[in-house]
Length: 68
Image (spheres, rainbow, N blue to C red):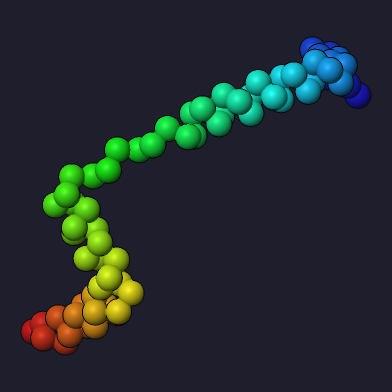
């Protein structure tokens, strides 16, 4: 059963609405996010490199074995 408040749009209106939504999304999503401060970026880069080499998980395991 069709929704009683449904809009019956013709193909031209449907296309125009989709184009407008797409254009607005392109504008919103294309805005560049500001970069974090240099110190924070350095720490993030360091974490990424440690994760890539597995150093963080090894250190965590080692710290866990020294607890009493």
